[in-house]
Image 1: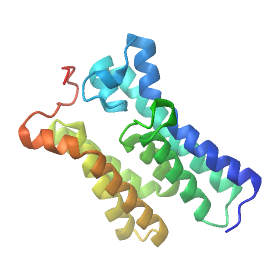
Image 2: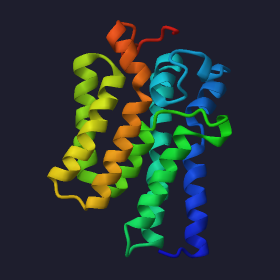
Image 3: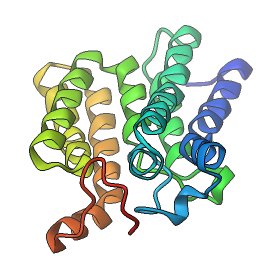
Length: 203
C-alpha cells in the first residue's frame, strides 16, 4: 500500500517516539545516575521502579505506554481504512523502545510500550493481558513473570476474542520478542537470583 508523505513522516516519528529513553532520562534527572549501570541494567520501568522508587517507576511506565499509544492512535486518523498503517506505526514504536538510537540501540524490553500500542489496536485483549500481568506479578513477586504472562496472554486472548488475523499475528510476534528479551530474567528465575518486585538491590 503506497504511503503519502504525512504517513511516512508518522512512521519515522513512531520509531523516534518509541526511542525516547524515558527511564534513562528520569533516573538521570532524579538520581543523577545511568540506570543501565544499576539493578538489572535495563532502562525500562521495572528497573527504574527498583532503583529509583515507586513514583519514578510509575512515571516511566506511563510515558512508555504513551510512546506506543499516541503513534498508533495518530496512525488510525491518517489511515483509517487499513490496519497496515497502524500496525506499522505500532511495530516501529516497539522497535524504537527496544533498540533506541539515543542509547546506542540498547533499550528496554518493550512491555509498557507494547501495552500502549495494543491498547489502541486490541483494547479487550490488552485488558486481559494487563490482568495476567497483575496476577503473575502478585503470585510470583516478580515483575518479569507478570510481563511474560502478559506476553503469552495477549495473542491467546486475541485469537479467542476473534481479533483480525493480522493483529493476532502482530500480538504473537511482539509477544515472542518480549519473551526473548526476558531470557536473562528466565535464567535468574531458574537460579533463584531474579529481582523481586520492589527490590532495590543492585545486581
